[in-house]
Amino acid sequence: MEETKPVKQKMKEKTENKKVDENKKPVKKVEHQNYNKLEKKKELHTEIKPEQKQVKEEPIKKPEDKIKIEEKKELPSPEIKKETETKIEEKSEIKKEEKKEGKTDKTQKEQKKWTEASVYLKDVPVSTKYAVAICNFIKKKNPEKAIEFLEKVLKKEKAIYMKGEFPHKKGMPKGMPSGKYPVKATEYFIKALKNLIANAKVKLLDTEKLYVYSAEANQAARHIKATRLAFGPKKFKRSHIWIGVKEK
Image 1 (cartoon, helix red, strand yellow):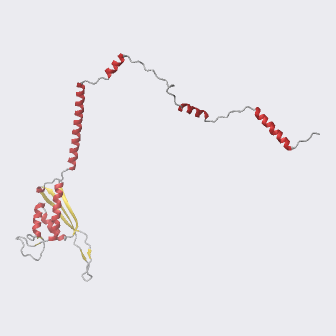
Image 2 (cartoon, helix red, strand yellow; image 1 turned 135 degrees about the vertical axis):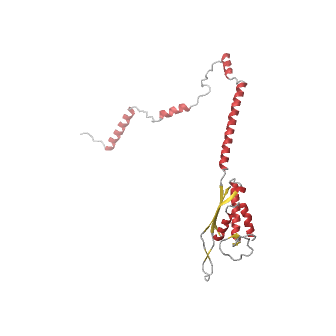
Image 3 (cartoon, helix red, strand yellow; image 1 turned 180 degrees about the vertical axis):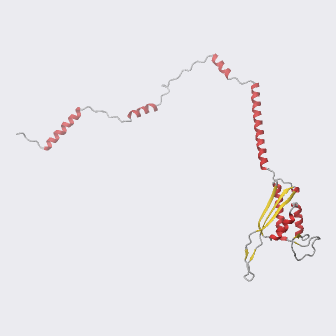
């Protein structure tokens, strides 16, 4: 009968046999995938020493070659210089003239002469009845002369004609059956006419040749006043005024 070996002894023998087999096998070198690439990069980055650099030998220039190079580098003649200078001056003059023409066109557009001027007053605290009477008086008159007349109305030297019967007719000029001195309304009209003359000057109109071709007064929204309950609610007097001017 064969002797049975213990289990531990069998395991030891197996491990020893494996070690012997591994020693006999040839060892394979395992290289990294990027190993070759890294080596190439190192070769590129390595600086070449000045001793190792290859010096290119320049060809010796002959005197004939030098003469040819000097001929190419010769400066242009004075006649050619003058021609070039004259051409440059002509171009600069043409550009200046074009710029001036462009500026004149712009100024003409900006300073465009208008045929008429106007002024508009909105929500003026004036009675529409008085405003209409003054508008009828101003029509077909020079605005400067109209201002002179309205200043006399403020001093109550002259009255404005109104339709209908009005009290206090004493001292009225001859040929005027009825009229009044609307002081508050005349003040607003004088301001409006002064603004109108200023607008006409901006639009390059001749102030001496101007005349009022239209003047209108319309009733505006009348808001309610706060008064006593005994007197009842009252409304403000409001009106819109528009005046237009033209040259004769």
